[in-house]
Amino acid sequence: MSKKLKFVLLTSFSSKLGYGHFNRCKILAEKLIKKGHKALLIVNTFDIKFTSTKYWIKNDNIKKNYPKADVCIVDKYYYGEIYYKNLRKFYEKIVIFDDCEFKVPNNVIGVINPNIYAHKSQYPTNLKVWSGKEYIILRDEFLKKRKFKKRNNIFLCVGGSDPTNQIDRLIKALLKESILNINVVYGPGHKNIRNIKKWEDNKQIIAHHNPKDISKLMSQAKYAISSAGSMLYELKSKNTPTICLALANNQKILGQEMNKFTSINYLGFYKDVTDIKLTKAIQREEKKNITNHRLIKNDLFLYGSKKLAADLCNYFLLIDKKNTPYTVSDIKNEYNYSANEKEDFKKLRWGSEKSMNNRYNFIIDKFISKNIKDWLDVGSGTGNLQFIVKKKFPEINPIGLELSEKLFNIAKKRNTKLKIKFFNMDFLKYNKNNFDLITCIGVMSKSNITLHNIFSKSSKLLKKNGLLIMDFKNKNWEKFNSTNFFPEAKHTWYEKNIILNEIKKFKKLDIVEFIGYKPNTNQKVLTSQSHTNYLIVKKKY
Image (cartoon, rainbow, N blue to C red; front, side, top):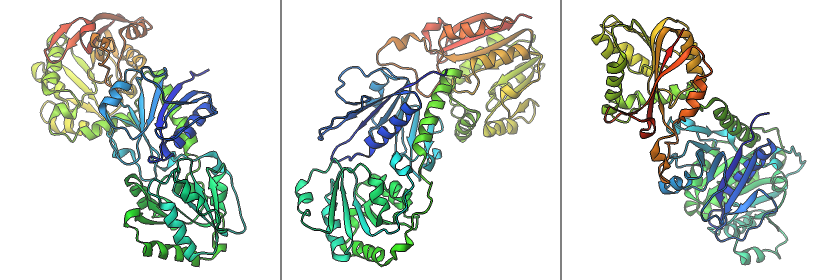
């Protein structure tokens, strides 16, 4: 039976913020629980009183310690570094929701942007991204297929709250142009009760406060007027023609994108929408034939929440099983992007040119000699190490393997005189053997290769007495004992005992040395004294 994960979701709502963040976190939490995992939704309610009958939804009254979890998901529009640095004390894996900022703080390993306009290329390549229309989050009620012979009323809602007091304006505009009944939906965050009550005597107005089945009201409408928030996805799933306005800056991009659908008419930011423009839009919808709005099959946005829950679980379970969250595609994308940098150390994502050169010199001085004939370098990058070694030891036959097409092409272009063999391929698919030396430097911190992979493959490719030299990000670095110092979230860090336990499984391999190394000073130290550790392994037979 596979491991059951625990998720903590942190979100908030208020009369100003609305309920969008809370609603999608609630939906996601429900899907995670349905998959057999645990989820706890912690809510900061600000100016609204809130109670829940769900045991897995709690008010945010945490002052010191958050509950333990495998993954923390934040949906608050918080991007400050201090917040996530403090949160990192409790959670190793932090994921955030984003809608329109397209930026992610440090200490965050992934981002969810469940919008039709979002694409992973809008985020740094070193992040895990769940984005686009396949992850749009809708409630289960929108999965119901409903068909009404007549759509003979109007649906009006601007979200869970109405901070800009638009409901009053929109009702007045509708009453001037339509004789249809208007279903006005007020969310739980609406605070202007006077405005709600003043329309009670108008028989054309039917008020609904936080209705349980809002999709039914949408399905019955000839057309709708709404804010340009996530409700547009719900209305589109019901094929309800919609006039919409952006009530906040973050809604503008969704309104513009949804305007590409013929059934959505985005008028712009509410402050810029004149009464004349609003009236004309209403008049156009009034003139349309009601019978043309038959409910047709529309699966465009229906299953995003289920897919998001499944993909999140699969991803984090894979990390737990393989100890690497990265795919070949992830590695290629990240290094194809960094290959555009001017300096080589930036192309290869080293911290500095000095630390890169120190690593090369350390390898050459300590392990490269005339006794080595055949050498395989895993993650050869731009070929710098191969060029240096080949010039110093012309008798050595180096082979470099590189996943990134762009880094490979740089090495190939520079390889004019030394005739080193470079291959654009995955180490796990390389099968030539009889190497005196295999190096894997700066690779394991972000790689599709697991500990088991590297030891198993090396035991097959090395000659008798051949060496495997590799480095790791050290999770046991003594600096991490400090309460405000943590392993960099976007790298894979390794514990020494886990490495040692894994290598014991391979009887042909024997540890020669396990050392700490400080790249900035080119200094050998105890393993606990540096963020970088080197492992040297010999094949016994």
